[in-house]
Length: 360
Ligand code: V47
Image (cartoon, rainbow, N blue to C red):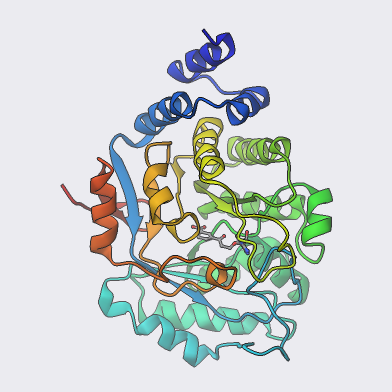
């Protein structure tokens, strides 16, 4: 009998918090099915047999970025071929064209554009919100919010208040990468530090704005760094609750400055989902983002603790620039089928996890 694993099992059964050492032990453990069993137990306690999805459209306003993170294949210079910045009219049209398809969320993220003023972003949100007040706008990662504060001189709270007034409903989880400044210095020195990223989410939560959180893994970080990242998210959630979902993002190396690094393996992806479910006892949802994991692994992830499979997405760009070979969007019926086939109950949700419809 594996005494250490039994100890962890005991904690999971009793709803006790796992330590950093427990998390590392699980990551290094080879009995995938034992880990699955524990993570599934934790998932069932949170969301029973439900697996959530939503119908959303990603709107990536521009790819012109001064940050140029080494892991990113999306951001480019304004002179580079393929550089674009949507006008507010174009951004509006991009959203408007899918409204008939039953979209309940616009997911708006872009890049750290060197010249576009904050007013531009406020205008885009405001126009979408005024025309479609019932569609939730999840917009701008903490890194973008921090950048808006830098270019305007407004505080983080003031930036958030302005966006909220314009119609922003919640904040996505991007830009977290790995919350370790040595690693950020190597990968993404020109954007928010770990503390700055956490501070944006802390402020949002204190204002009652819900947010998500992510972890970019499978590049230069160690397993210890990943566990430390999870614990920082867990600590913030204890201090100022507001994270709705955690989304682990496997690094896709194609077209990036880190091309010598191989893609993560299926075992690593699945373990990361399971360890996240078990470590993040205070975050309700773990999202298997099918765009990055691939549909097959995303489906398997539902047996390893994930209870959300993101949405229909409709035209994703950031991950496809980095070699994601999945479709740019899938239909609602396909999502329902892949959740049902995995033996779970598909539940269409809105951005704030209100249940819109169950597909029994
Ligand atoms: O912050 C960039 C990551 C993030 C690559 O909140 C890459 O519901 C892998 O955060 N390989 C943006 N990852 C996307 C994001 C997101 C996606 C879906 C749902 C939600 C949510 C958030 O994408 C970036 C960065 O961590 N990223 N380049 C790459 N080559």
